[in-house]
Amino acid sequence: MKKTYFTKNQKETISLGKEIAKNLIKKKKRKKALILALIGDLGGGKTTFLKGFAKGIGIKEKILSPSFILIRKFEIPKQTLNFKNFYHIDCYRIEKPKEILALDFKKIIDNPQNIVAIEWADKIRKILPKKILVLKFEVLGKTKRKISFYSK
Image (cartoon, rainbow, N blue to C red):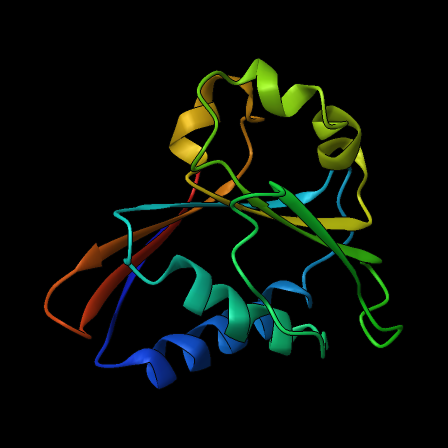
């Protein structure tokens, strides 16, 4: 099932992230990590969306794009019992999927207590599991975004 959302500004994009997070954490337990594959152009709203998503799962720390460190890990508060960790991965600087494998990527995505948000996920598409949630970000104007959300 595909859903499409339109946001007019950063505040709405953050709110959408928060709303989607609250709905996803209500889902039943999983056998592997919950993976959000974010794709779209630079400045498309991926990190802005994840700021809201992180708030929606109770994370208080500031969410910044981990472009230079690739992976940031956050502990999810106990209120979201099915999940323990939130991983924010940025593949912008990745040239080959094997680069991310060297950072325990397989171990991270195999753990059902993890939520893993991957910006620039199209760069590592070959190593992603079959069951993922894809969020496609499209720039419609200076602050307007089209965000499509679907399961794969």
